Image 1 (cartoon, helix red, strand yellow):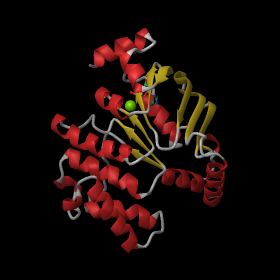
Image 2 (image 1 turned 60 degrees about the horizontal axis):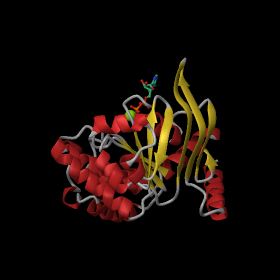
Image 3 (image 1 turned 120 degrees about the horizontal axis):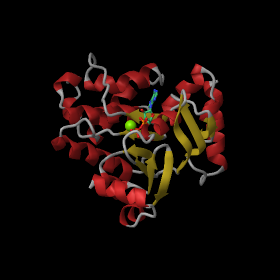
Length: 262
Ligand code: ADP
Ligand code: MG
């Protein structure tokens, strides 16, 4: 089943380079009686950085969790690399999906009993079946990319929050995902550490990483995004290039939110 996921993903990528890497169409999701997503349409093309901004509780994290297959919508379709995520059934299919989609959260969730290097090596070896030497070489490259190469022998508890989050980003990259989802990765950090994490993400975006960012850092979203989506109460109120969303939004609701957030 994992093989079939891989094969169909590659076939569809080959069929059309311009089709989006991620697409959500009319996604509806409720927890019990509470409708949380009320018809969400989102597209991310390869190499793009897409931001989702909006008030707390508006559905941003729920959108990301649908893309990872952790939540299944009651209506609508979700495709990642041409594969319908909402149609996956077996554990092997979900594992294959999670190799393609990296997820970094507000809480860094590193393995506390493993060194920094080992945090990056374990999944490529155990889940990806990579030879250990190759996984270590790649882990060192990634630690250099997030400016943490000097800490490969340290344990997570010995690092600052900003350092742990940079390692968590490197760990997500270690699985060579096609896409990374960043969910408020700087929200739990002390203010002086926010910049170092944003610098790492900015570098990755400039390298062409495809990503979706849920963030409260409005200036950062404006700077790095190709497209910005503004969500409120389970709807996409509007979307577009950052210059328009931040400079002259169509919706009064977007305008009011941006005024509160600046
Ligand atoms: P955001 O990330 O924009 O702050 P979320 O996507 O986390 O918003 O949540 C959207 C809404 O769904 C909120 O009202 C939240 O309380 C509700 N919600 C999220 N997860 C659950 C859950 N597991 N069970 C019930 N309600 C949930
Ligand atoms: Mg959230």
